[in-house]
Image (cartoon, rainbow, N blue to C red; front, side, top):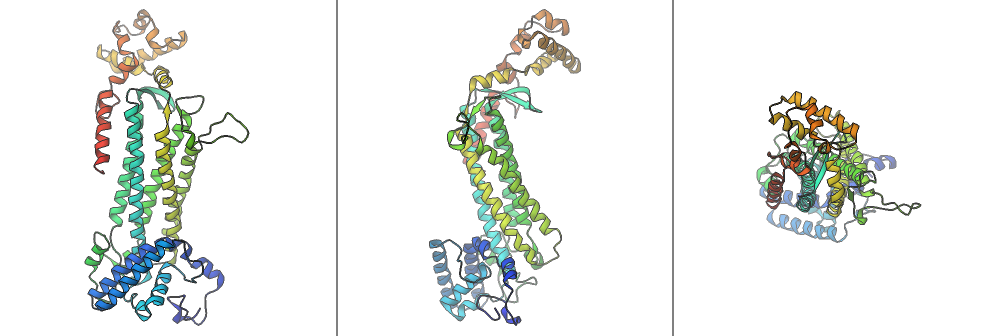
Length: 465
C-alpha cells in the first residue's frame, strides 16, 4: 500500500501492510461512530487554520461547504462504508475531501495529528453520550417520583439482611432508588466537566507548529478551554475511564433495582406484578411470567463492569504519549454506553408499569415484628435506658413467637411482665401507621417527610438538576 490514497502514512514504507496486520490495526468498522464528531472538529480546525493565516478565507469557505455536504451524506447513509479501504474514520474523511476538493483536501491536516484529532473526536462523542445518558436517568427518576406519588399511602416492608426490619412507605422505597440514580447523574456530570477540554493544537505530542488560537478553537467546539499540556492531551483517556466508572456504578444500581423487583414479584413475596410488556413466558410452562427484563438489568451490569475493568487494564502500563493500545478505548466505551442506554430505558418502563398489591404490602410491612423497634423507643420515652429497653423488647418478641401472635396481640400483663414501664398506651404506638409516622425527621419515612421529598425531587427534575 506504499504511497496509497488509502493511507495517511505510506511514504516512509516500501511495501504495504500485511493482511493480518490490517485486520488488527484498521478501526473504521468501529470508530465510524465518530464520523460526525470528526467532521465537526475538522470544520473548526479549518477555521482555526484560516485565523492563523495558513488557509485563505476562500479555502476555509470551500472546506466548510465540503464538510457540510459530507455531514449530510453521512446523515443520509449512516452505515460505515465497507469498501473504502480507509484505515480509520479520519482517513475516510480526508479521502472524501480530496475527492471533492483535490489538493485543498490535503491541506486540512496541516498542523494536526491523528493523535489530537481522535482525542478531540472522542471527547466530543463522550460529551454527547453523557448528555443522553443523563436524560435517560432523569426519565427513570421521573418514573420513580410518579410511583411515589401513587403509593404515598402504601406501607411497605423495609429489609436489612433481606429480613423484615421496619415498615416504610412504598414511596420512600421508590425515592431511595431515585436518589441513587441522582448520584449517577452527578458522576456523569463530573466526568463530562473534567473531559470538556480541547486537545486540538496538541498535534502528535509536542504541540502544533502553527499559530493556532487554541482558546477560540476550544470555544468553537463548545469546550471550556484547551488542554494544558500537549503530551498529556494525546495520552489522556481519564475521561473514558471516568465515564466507564460512572456507567459501571449506574449499572450496579440498575442491577440492585432489578434484583429487588425479581424478589418482590416472586410467589413467595407477591408484592408486585410487572407489566406484560417487560416480562416473558415459558416455552413449556404455560403459567409462567418471568421477569426477564429485570434479569437482564442484573446481567448487563457484569458486561459494563467488565468494560471498565478491561480498559483500566489496557491503560495501566502505557507510557506517555500516544500508543496504539489506546485504540482499545472505543469498543468497550461504545458498548458500555449502548448497553447502559438500553438498561435505563428499560428500567423506566419497568418502574412505570409496576403494579403493587397494596394489601399484601401492608400485611408484609406489619409482619415479622417490624414494630419491635417502636416498642423499644416507647419504653425509652418511659424512662427506660435504651439497652434495657432493647433487652426487654427482645424478650417480649420471644414471648410473641412462642404464642404465635404479633406484639400488639399480647395481653398487657404479659408485656409488663418483661417491661414493667409499659402501659395500655403502648398499643397505640404499635400500629403500622404510628410506627411509620414516628419517623418524622428529614430523610425519614413519615408521610409528611416523604411528601416534601417528592415535591423537592420533582422541583429538582423540573429545574434540570
